[in-house]
Length: 104
Image (tube, rainbow, N blue to C red; front, side, top):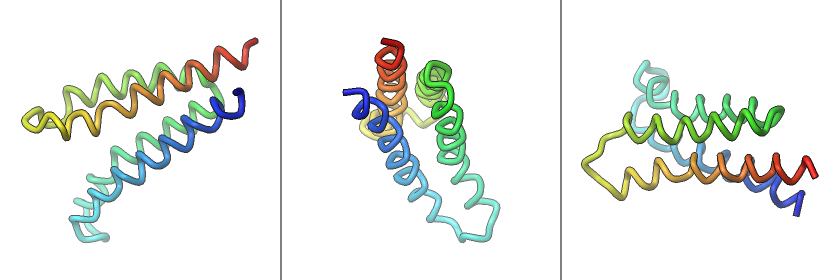
């Protein structure tokens, strides 16, 4: 169970970051627009580096990113909002569970 809780949030957030990175490819690769559209996935991956070392702090960061993304992304399309906002909350919870199980 510890191995499952250790690897699941890490693999899930990498897949989610790759999914978000797909949206950056609507801009030319060597442009400022590509860099701007890549920022969400870069922030998520930088948070993963922090969460890999400190799981409890990483869990709080991912929950904060989920809350932040609710206000940041467009609210017109609710399916899109759920697809983008739910994974950070889930990964934050999984990091918290991984932290709690590693303490026992």
